[in-house]
Amino acid sequence: MIFRQLLDARSWTYTYLLADEESREAVLIDPVFEQARRDCALLDELGLKLLCTLDTHVHADHVTGAWLLREKLGSKIAIMAVAGTTGADRLLADGDIIEFGKRSLEARSTPGHTNGCGTFVLDDQSMAFTGDCLLIRGCGRTDFQQGSSKDMYKSIKEKIFTLPPSCELYPGHDYSGRMMTTVAEEVEYNPRCGGERSESDFVGLMEALGLPHPAQLAVALPANLQCGEPTDKKPMPVEPTWAPLRYSFAGIWQVGAQWLMEHSSEVQIVDVRPAEEIAGALGTIEGATLLALDNIAQASERLDKQRPIVVICRSGGRSAQATAKLMKAGFANVANLQGGALRWSAIGGQLVSQAAG
Image (cartoon, rainbow, N blue to C red; front, side):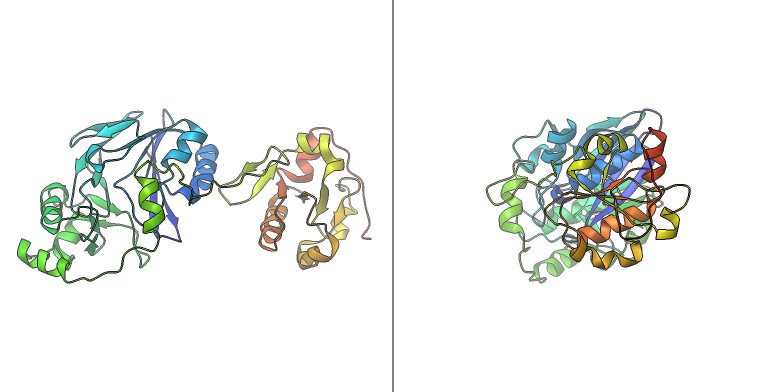
């Protein structure tokens, strides 16, 4: 099975990708709206087909990417039926099975943080995804969205702690950089619900937390109640339209050599190799601006921010680094030439030796 754990640094939300290696069918658990572009890039690079997104609950601290991924990829949306959302393709009940290739997840109803929380358990019970019900050495809050400390205690004890002790648990969040735990660890060491702590111990502790409401509450809840479809307060991400660009999992836009060959006069071509390399056997595209990677800080003086930029090097590695630096410097329309000068030459593009100007 293919497995990846992804992080949205703004909300400290973990998104989980699971895929069957043979069929290449995949599911995403707890996708984040702002990270949909990243998730699409990873699916594309790994050659996976996203069948379904699963949300462990109606989130209050970020907007789910479920709706946006359905718009982009045609994936289905699944969430526990008692969550009270509109727009989902599949409303899950306790015990329902979500299949992807030869693998599957079991949906377990684990209310407490919200009344619609679910935990997703892998078919061989080697992994479980607990959302905000059980965290690493903690648990989710229970003071709003129909939360219940008594329900959470029961959910943890009966639906999660009954899994095999070696079962790896993956939470919806962690604010200390921890990535996973196990049933055995949490049974013994969780300070809220582990050891000999009774239900009354747990309820008393949870009622005394006094936490402030999440900062994104006013935006997140309305959108998540309709599976992430944007409200007036949630703008759609802007996609570049100046070329048929491909977003990489490394976080940069890339453009193909064939498109550049047909539209080279419409963009600024920037070669970031040293002058002596460009003067060698493998030259550069005629008319390219020579701006070595070490001198990329000069870009604001030498390049027009209003015109799209395509960055090249020998094979696409150094130019990818330069592309990222230009994006951070405020160049909005910039892309890396995929495969670099080697790819350009392979499809018949001409390269010329050029001395530094």
